[in-house]
Length: 237
Image (cartoon, rainbow, N blue to C red; front, top):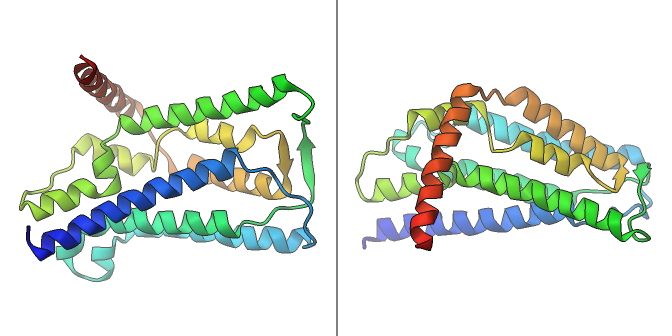
């Protein structure tokens, strides 16, 4: 293996590990992190700092889709790294949001789950089911392509990368799977503070305005689900 291939292999592996770590942090932040309302900052400063974090993520997520890194650097030879750079930048923005997020002292609603086992399990099962649906929707896509790994492998093996036109069409209509499940995760909280309401409203609005999946995209996902199901059945035999 050449030094050039080794460098690209390291980039691909690092991108995959970073993505997995980011997803774990985001899942913990959205579903399993208790809201802390015992801070001394004013709500206005908290909301402003959180709004900047959300704006950074949205700007990165939208602009890098329109202007890939190879276009910005005017270097078509780097096109195989466009998706990897996009995913890495997205992960970085999400990690910043999770680490620098501030809680508001204003509570919009509060459902005491500590005194009710049923309520506690209700929210827990709801979130777990929503994440499971997101997982199922994700495996119906071409995950190596989504993370940018397939592009690197094809480039290093001197293969001509050609993305499925149906998948490209889906990417242009939908950033990532399951709008409904992610909306449930954002809104179905036992304690809804002002900062979490800001997060839910901006993310739901952004997803609603940016996503345009249609029946052709649904047909492609159903077709992919059939293929993945067949692969899993062959593995289990």
